[in-house]
Image (cartoon, rainbow, N blue to C red; front, side, top):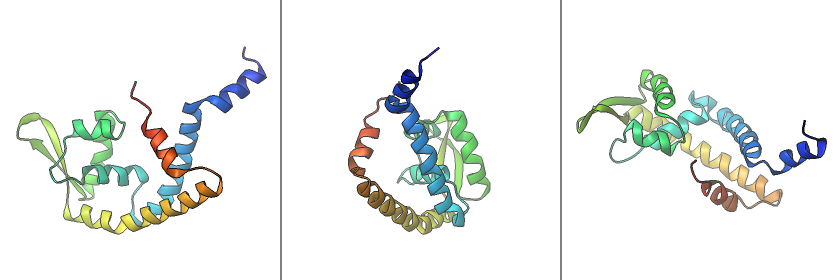
Length: 147
């Protein structure tokens, strides 16, 4: 059985624990910010990841969001039902599916983006006040390689 000092070591050193805890806190913060739009933070990220000149495939969006294809497909369905995203067959590979924003999806993103910016501005101030550099934090998180 681990000793109490070992428990404290894991608490203080574990990147996974810190990242998960922080992800939950950030998710709650952004879920609240996006509530007036009927979106979760995950849905906002998904819509933004589909906002491209050419419709991306589910296979391309899933790793970008750090998800598996099955989870992404399940996450797309309510957005499709709301008329924010369309799913079409990939003409180059009939097994694949392409994701596109609808006009309603673009309008919703356009309305939600200023809220996202304002929330990030608040977070940047809070982080700097706590002695952290937001850009370094983002860079550090982005440096974690896939397994």
